[in-house]
Image 1: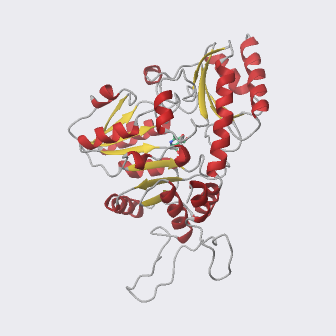
Image 2: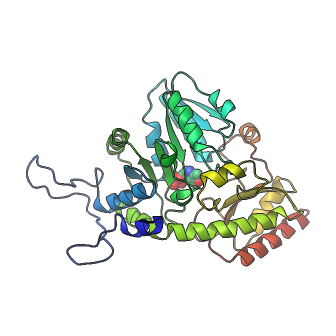
Length: 386
Ligand SMILES: Cc1ncc(COP(=O)(O)O)c(C=O)c1O
């Protein structure tokens, strides 16, 4: 079956009791057992819940995985993956990663004795030089955040496995519509379900998808032991979001491509970072690795300074000034002061997160309205001499 058909039908069997086409929402925290010490399919919601299991089944199928585990947030999911490691182990991560992941690796994992190196995952020779004897996990994003760099997932999987490490891919920006890292050799896929999967800015969630049972069992043990699960209501919303994921993402990609073209042709813009533009260094790889679209996230550098970029973000009307991404409403933010503020100034400079960078999450509004909104805001931001 095609992706969009599976998104609607896998994990969404009708309710046998009532015939309801949408499975009921199971809010129960505990379940009656057949006998003392005899366990039914579900016993306690931290260990398993039918509504969460339905979402996990659908996303596992869409990512070509064997199983999935849903967490309370994307960060909780990423944290659980790092808990596969022990003190003395090492994580090698790409340098174009979400600020919260940077913070988790440098301010939480380090306290557990896990060392971290960030290296440019788009340059495989440089990236390979980042491996240490105790590297157990490689963590990348493609497209990266906020520079939209494209990393060769299959090549990274090969590299990680040659060094005895697992490859985890934060595929939040790509969604399984555009990239399926497990098919390319990755061991773990992570999504902030808060973003495209939910799609409507009304749920916080995360998910890990894996292709091997042994890894799934280890992660399940960590999840059950630490109690970081997605609640039934959020699981229901995530399942609902998946049903329209492909339609939303494909439409959002088309609009983002047009916005990128508009910005690239505008003399007020220094550079546009969007893998769908032939000028983007990852364009050819993205063509091969991404399935019929380049994502709906883009960043651009305004010809101006920190204040100009700040004013730009504060001047749009349709693009709302907010972190997060992937929903029906378009958002705008300044990475240097918002999503990547947890990088210190030196780290931002090192990773190309310039003060004049603006990041857009393109939603489902009409292209013409979004274009006019950006046009007006650029005029306001650059004309002001405050
Ligand atoms: C690429 C990426 N990964 C992970 C996260 C963290 O997800 P959450 O906010 O659901 O914890 C985010 C959130 O912005 C993100 O953009």
